[in-house]
Length: 140
Image (tube, rainbow, N blue to C red; front, side, top):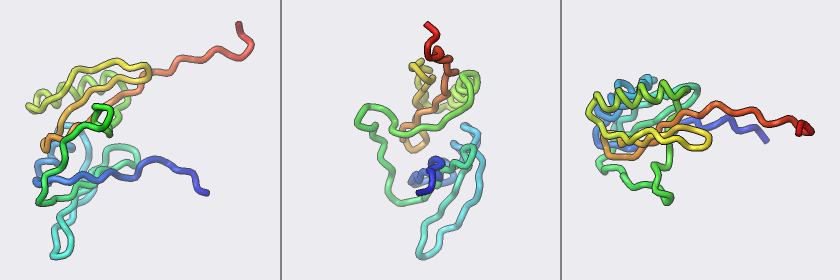
């Protein structure tokens, strides 16, 4: 059985592809990988590179996406940045763009904040905290 490497893409629907692509590229720093125009049999699609080999596939639809939180009251999905400083920078860019974003919270293994994209969909943005070394076995 092959080893899993991670998530290849996450698909988001939107009624305004240009607005959502602009948010993820101009505010959050993703890069537009490619875009396909609508055809009689397929909707308009854009794919944005969010780092590594991870992508968001954004599909333009006539129906607005759900904006509910997950069963735990969280966004249900998130994007990762490398450091706390980068998380602070992203938060400042979101605020300067006029979009809503919560405070940065400190969790045991990461820092996190939740924003809402232009469709109102919740998105967690996180940075993992540096790992502390575990004591070596037998070093009491």
